[in-house]
View 1: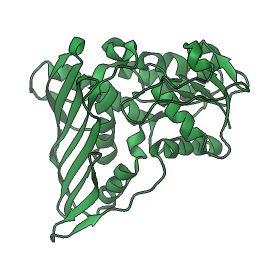
View 2: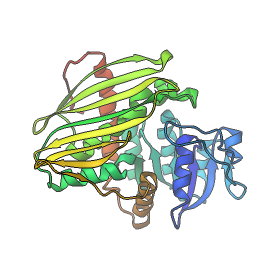
View 3: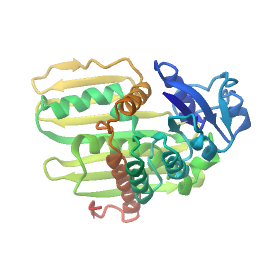
View 4: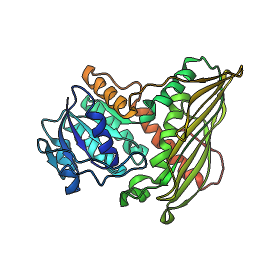
Length: 338
């Protein structure tokens, strides 16, 4: 499969590392507006997890400063889009119109309307479109999902999903909510999406929080209301620049026990109702590699991505946008009908 990587920032470099471990995936083109990155020097790339980027050899690849030109490359079969969020839809649609299959980094788009336009274009062109909602492939979340959906822990009674980090400093675009969606779209859309994966869409939600983008603060707590569960909490965001550490965690309470995980040193564990604790076995493969492999397999056999369907990725965008809007209403319950 001949692939173009469009965007060579933090997520682009992360996807490149994963792609290098996938047999049959052939990187043939790269795109970046940064001449240094386009030369293969990703040493200045930073993100909220992992270390700095590497220096790579792009001498045998086609290199594009213009993302649209990369999307039109006639030899490319699939594109992996890791651009600022506001560029996801226009570049994805251009690639689809030129016959490419598209993997696009989360969030799928800056709002639900353009996300739906992407889905319509993929259907029109008969191509595979998938959003890289990586928690659906992250080992600690996969094992929790399988326990819940498999029914072995019984009825879920409550859930909490939290994700926090320092305000990013690696690009001016990410601090502009009109371009990135801010901290809520950067972080919490992961947890919104995993709620959709586990429980479907909530009937209503309520949000609280605070935004002060000049000082790097964009925090929010939302309660999702499900008739059969009660409430599920999604919380977190950006907490000041530079020093604040990244963390992600979940707690899912069910009749048969509580499943819990934290990146701050607590492995995925089932605390059973009978008092026993069971550390859960998790796959050792990177979630990034697993999601790209799955996308490429869907392309190979011409199968729509059932694990990560684009309609749910679009719904995650709509729910996250509604969470941000509901924050202004300071806890008032808002219906989730789209």
